[in-house]
Image (tube, rainbow, N blue to C red; front, side):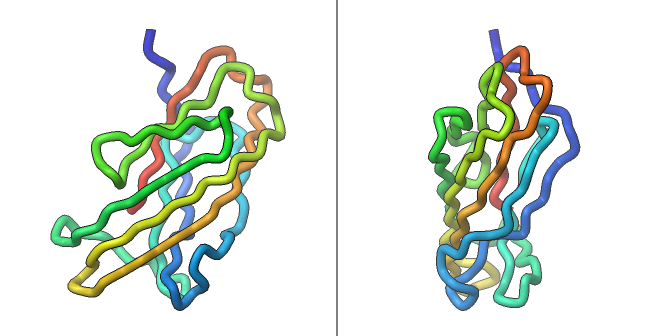
Length: 137
């Protein structure tokens, strides 16, 4: 039986920063109290301005989690992932995500990286596993 699909409000996190902003910089933590339908990790420049991706751009991404309570699997491509929150995930669980986005955007070579800490404060605990989308865009 497939997992339940998350349906809470989408979360946007402008956190994928280029080398001039400090490669691998840790971005502000986020807390989720209901499973969001998606979490979007947005690339931004050194000033925090969003760098939009277009179909003409050639980029690939990676996403990893350090927690068995937040299992990440690649989705349709390297910019789309699915994370599974298990049933009964403890309140206060902390997950660290590491993301990269490399390639060419608007003809310019890019290398964005991010570390994002997510605190799971879903109460009462989930009765069934829930899948949510994570997008690098």
